[in-house]
Image 1: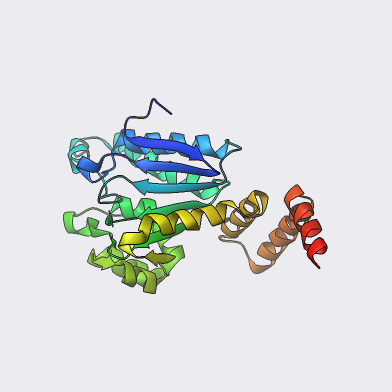
Image 2 (image 1 turned 30 degrees about the vertical axis):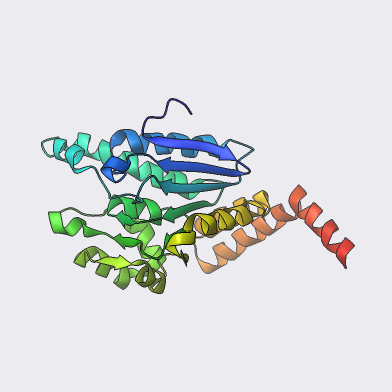
Length: 255
C-alpha cells in the first residue's frame, strides 16, 4: 500500500477505499494512476477484510479525465503502442466488472471523459448535488471508446449516443433522471451520506452480493433460456452458502 504514489488505498470496517490522489491535476488519469487503481482493485478482491469497494477523488473533483499532457505524448506513437495504452484502461474496466465485491463511485465535483467512464464502470454511483458528468471527448476529436460497452447497457443506445455525440456536461439531477447514477446527496452532508450507504452495503451477505453481481453481468448477451438456467445454478449455489444458512436460522428464530 505504501508504494502507491497517485492513489490512497486503505481497508477499514469492510470497506476498501481507493482515492484518486492527484488533486492538483483534478485527478487526471495517466498510465501510472490507472495501473495503481488496477493493483488496488486486485488487492481488495483477495482481501477477506474487504466487502465493498469505495472509489473517490481527492480534492474538489472526482476525475477530470485523461491527463492531456500525457495524451499528447502518444500522438506520434504507432498503433501497437496506442493500443497498449488504451488496453490498460480497458482491462481495468473488465477487472471491475468481474470483481467479487460491489464497487461504489462517490462523485463530488466533476467526473468528465475518462473520469466519467471510470465512475460508469462502477456498479453504483453516488453523487453530490453539485456534481457534473459528461463525455466531452468529441470536442477534441477523441472518442470515449471503451466505456461505450458499459454506457449503452446503463442508458440505452439513443441516450448514450446523445451524450457521446454532443459532449454535453450534465448535472447530477439530469444524470439521475437518465438512470446514469443511483443517488444524489446534499453537498454539505455528502461524506456522511456516502459513509452510511457503503456501511449498510458492507453489512449485507458478501456471498449473496458476489453471486448477484456475477449473475447479473454474466447474463449479458445470453438468450432468455440461458439466463434462466444461469439463475438456476446461482440459486442452487446460494442455498449452500454459510451466509444463507445463518440467514435462514436467524429468520426462523424471529418468526
